[in-house]
Amino acid sequence: MSTETKFDVIVIGGGPGGYVAAIRCAQLGLKTACVDDFTGKDKKASLGGTCLNVGCIPSKALLESSHHYEQLNHGLENHGIKVSGVKIDIPAMIKNKDDIVGRLTGGINGLFKANKVSSFHGHGKLLAGKQVEITTTKNKVSIISAESVILATGSRPIDIPTATVDNTNIVDSSGALDFNETPKKLGVIGAGVIGLELGSVWNRLGADVVLLEAQDEFLPIADKKVAAEAKRQFKKQGLDIKMSARVTKAVSKGDKVTLEYEDATGTHKITLDKLIVSVGRSPNTDNLFAPEAPVDLDERGFIEVDEIWQTNQPCVYAIGDLIRGPMLAHKASEEGVAVAEVIYGEEPKINYDVIPSVIYTSPEIAWVGQTEQHLKSAGEKTKVGIFPFAASSRAQVLGDTTGMVKIISSEETDQILGVHIVGPQASELLAEAVLAMEYSASTEDIALTIHAHPTLSEALHEAALAVDNRALHIPNR
Ligand code: FAD
Ligand code: NAD
Image 1 (cartoon, protein in one colour):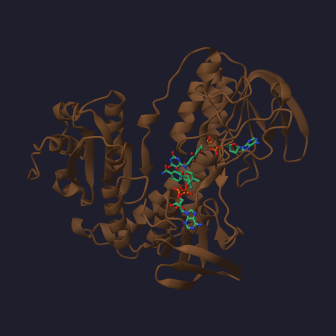
Image 2 (cartoon, rainbow, N blue to C red):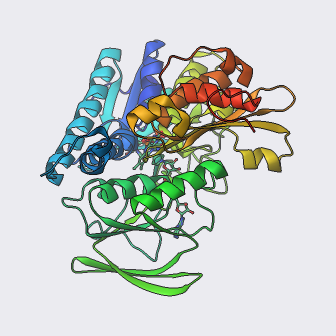
Image 3 (cartoon, protein in one colour):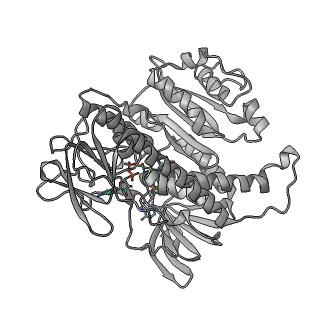
């Protein structure tokens, strides 16, 4: 804990928004402090926020481990590899995940030291005059101040009264990363990004998983065709996704949860070993500012900011999950860099139209730009090219031919408006599409770009050719 009290910039929150903002401020020569309250499983301060501690990284670690297990059990027969006696050690899997988290969060401490960012562990609260009150876990209070303050306190899981999280049988996403054995029967409320990723983890590890989704449309944020293909694959994997399901009651007793829900077919009662509640996240604004330093919120409780991420309070900024836009780590980090540069006197811009989204299930789902349904409803005239991985030689070699690449471009200019991928390594393939859209490329630009053979990226090339009915490895429309 630093003994300094006066800074150029104080960042409250040490997640991918806050820690990146702090490092960029320090790189620009600003004297910077970061206040973060996250305490790890070892009861020690742990930088990196939701993303590194209980979000992106631990969930991907478990997705990777469970994918290996799944592959050993079911994925290698086509390759002529027969495996028997595969055993699973869940505590070892969880330890591997914790070790990865420990190395990465420790890495941020190192980056802070190298960049001379002063780190404070405790709850930060904005007072008048850009002072920040810090309350430690032992209730010691101190005050530091700065010329500018960046609020980056992120978000937390939304609670629902019908299924109260007790952290034993009914858990949120953090609890679902720490089961010490595979639950036999696992319920998930919400078939969104977290429900699908964590439901997939435990399904691969042997749980019987049922997802209860309130909406009647599956993954409405994704392109309809891609969502439909993903749903078909999830069903094949054994995920039981119940749509238009309204949970009315969930009671945790002993080592079981009894859950009641209603859907179009009537009222149902199921008994579960564990229940994950993943129905969205809400911004962390509780006790974040004193009445003498009020910060305006929008109608959904997010902090209101202008085009330079400034709140109603001059020189007080907000970024990441705390403000409008997708709740994604890379969006938070981009805003962190941008705000640091605003404070330094520059005029950075973020292209919010080109933020990639990925769901790390199998198949992976990845997209950038607009969906076809959105463009249609906006009256845009478009061209569409689709290339299935079944026609990709590399996908055949991998033995993973599910899914497709879909490119949508403007009928008038051919500029790419959206790229949607469901299939193997969609997360990595998307980067080319993001770069293309950042440069306002046309599908012709991708068509003219030579792609190495045999690679999965050829599917993007072929989808670009398909926009003008000249794909080489599928019959044209
Ligand atoms: P956070 O990461 O939430 O960090 C905020 C920090 O501020 C936390 O450490 C918090 O403890 C601290 N804090 C809160 N209040 C105070 C206070 N008053 N004083 C001091 N400190 C405070 N996004 C992706 O892009 N890719 C993924 O694969 C992905 N996977 C995810 C998986 C899960 C299970 C979850 C839950 C989320 C996932 N996300 C993913 C979302 C991603 O984690 C968030 O979008 C991202 O962490 C937001 O960054 P942030 O810096 O705004 O806030
Ligand atoms: P989400 O918004 O993706 O999904 C929540 C789902 O719960 C929705 O489908 C919603 O209709 C449903 N729902 C809401 N209330 C319900 C109820 N009472 N009963 C049944 N269903 C209900 O939210 P999430 O999955 O909790 O994830 C939160 C955020 O974290 C997301 O915005 C996402 O951007 C981020 N995240 C990203 C990644 C990634 O980038 N791979 C991974 C995990 C989380």
